[in-house]
Image (tube, rainbow, N blue to C red; front, side, top):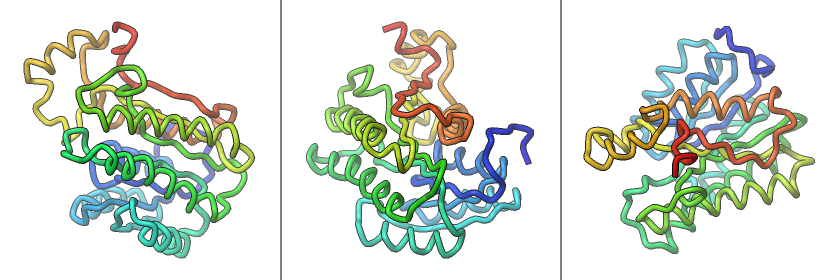
Length: 247
């Protein structure tokens, strides 16, 4: 059990999509560390099982679900299975999404990225997560504060935050909604980037002179979900080492 106390009650559950690696895995590990039960979702069965194996020693309940969150039936079935395993699920981290380097048609990419966040959120909300419920979506500084050379990635991340603001305005009676926005983060998707010419150039523009770690994003996410953030709703939180203030 961690000495960090964010105000969660023991045994409360969080559902984390994209939990098989990177930010999702870090959120799962720290959630279990502070006593939350976890429902771990990912497309990759091997990565998902690796995360579950790392989480289980913390002694909290663990549920896993292999699913494509862009598919209605997979999400509906997963929520039912998770609730049977863990009971009510108070918190949701919408983290799943394709890598920015994925070669996807623009319209299909937005359907996958934004549609999956809406799909999972609506399914979760329909279960009645209860008083104090909260959702955090992983958005990005890309599209919200910086442009990128990938049109669908920038557009989808901006759209996700737009959806978060809509939820914060119109669904606050059911749950709080916020967005966590990583800058350049040291995950498998960016392996080797910091050593590249472009990566070195970007690092020089970051006041903290390093990439974020998945842990940096995970703790910001858990804070936004937590009772300590009970009056924070509709916030876009960059976790970027100050990168965007230098632009």
